[in-house]
Picture 1 (cartoon, rainbow, N blue to C red):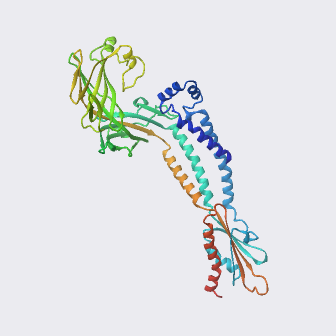
Picture 2: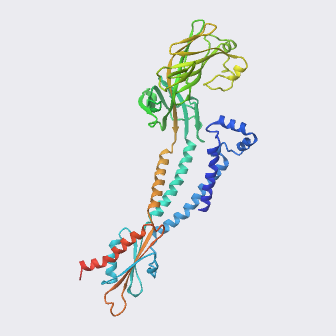
Picture 3: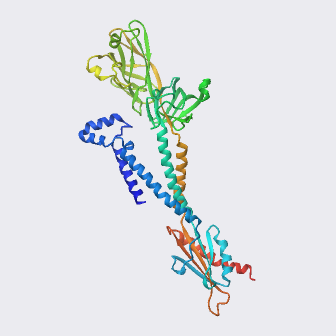
Length: 507
């Protein structure tokens, strides 16, 4: 037990860096920034796996040792528990007057009659009756054996919870994807369909549970101060045989009401807006596009982003890279102006507007380097290969004209939703073990182990006649709080039982 407590302390101590330092699994760019800012010290922490605490070798070692220690504690305790469960209550102490709780009385009844009267009062107690020297008889009784049962249940459930959690992490996965709320679909057919995907150790992404979700619309309700009141996505889904028949089933997806299908859960995490832009090129051809813009203010949904276009009918890759267009800037669902500076006063779409900056040139999409969908490649701007050619505030339906006759029109807004797909094959087991942990803990804290002994001894001497001295002793094996009152009540009943029996049956 001392080893287990020491390992628990080490586990808590080892978890501190995971709470205080950025973790690579949650925010890799922030980890890189932290290492850069702290120089050699940041690199040392990286070598010691302090940015991957929960997946580090040393944290896993503490976890495994704690697991082994827990098993080592439970095995001998289970053997002792099995031995005690079939053992008889201990012998009645020779001198009951030394017990913490004691009461005595003399009654006009034989020892056998006394025990016969006392025995019904000890229903629910595990009791054994014994004969002693000098014609005395005694009853040894104990109660509260469920305390140890609850204690073992708690620890075994904790062990099961750890195993179930580990198995769930090995065979589970979690991914997030942004879906436009205009009838767009997402299918759980592979990891490439996700914007981010965190697989378990035994998941390679090739055997995901197949299902599809179609987002037909999104509705958000806000309080007058802009605080969100409710989010609701109108979705349809298909899984199993529905995929073969192309049957869609409706579902009202809400924040606290996930969709459960094909063994997975689909959560509604967040939402935002995708401004719709139509670019008309000098030859009259048009391109309409909308991608999600990132909210920079969750209270007002002021968003930033970049919508990128390739020129039509340009097959020469060099010429195409010279004529690409990016519409960047800010989007406000409820436009508020401070001079010419656009901001948002409310998260709902009451008066949408954009403050755009239009870039033309090489967007760097063919450079082989990854780039954010919410911005343009600033290296291209620094190299002069991407230049800003216009900037303007646009309301719904307004447009701006570039120097070559190209026009950019702000046509509308499409909401998007952020969905999270979670797969955990052991979630039911985790719930069961969690309930058992609570049940075992409550049982072990509320049930008290206590013992009571009753001895009936014939009164010695010529004047004793048929009188019997009745002694009652009590002992709380654990916490004694509250047993004094229980013993007072119980001893009173036990001492009064022979008299009541004698009155009912005088013969």
